[in-house]
Length: 351
Image (cartoon, rainbow, N blue to C red; front, side, top):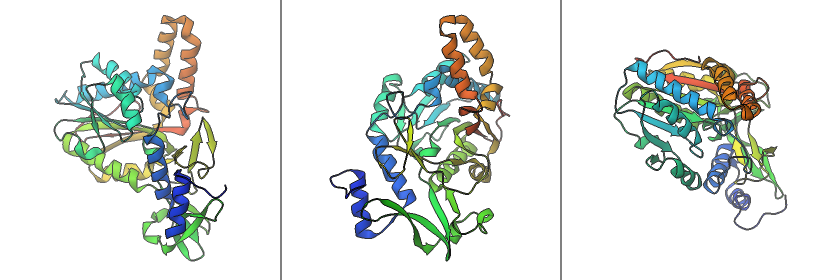
């Protein structure tokens, strides 16, 4: 990378680092994704990545049926609110709400979205929705039905590295030609999860204060108002060592430092840590299961067969989409579904 110039985020970061020293991985990731999502619609074959709702309507339909089932068995409390965090183009909400409506669930619609580009796409499908910059302005009365698909993975992660002097925050420096990882100067042992305290030199631990704060707020809302939540993302059911930071552009992985603000930066979600946070707030953790397990439990295989029989000319595409969503070598195993519910709400299908 040559000496950057202009107003690209590469140039801004380089000047900032030159003036004030290395920045945290979390800072690098947060600013990169703020620029990235604020300036484009990244979805679809012409974009950078494709999410499950864009692969098949079956995904959103089954989410909608899950929400309706939970709400009905909880007593049909009104007013009820559908809340989606990072709703993309609004495709998941469209398919979910259409399916839920068949069973009498017609909630008020709320989107937590910070991207002006994506909000414009959502507005086309959901002109009566209410938009929120964060969770703080959601209504305080009535149960919340919360869905977040591929939301947590884009929140900034903090990386800690074990050095010869102890645990330090992993930072981003610039050597005059390119961005490089460097260790910070301040001890970070207090921020380290207990299970990794004795990890060897060179070990890297990721945590996500932003994801933790999101789950803390969601769980508090569910405990106070009632409701249920689904968080769907790629990640692990147990904490693991190592960096999972990656960048995607035009459906290909690239160096996370190659094009800040021009590529989607993500990291794997530590669902085990998030489940503990939710439970500390007095809500029930329904479980964390592979996406394939969850969708099979909701009947995706029968749904796909019925759709294929109804429209045989599209059968191959329908069955291919099913396999992409639940296949072990595709999204079925890597992606996880974590469910949360208020204490008085029922047990859930799919877990």
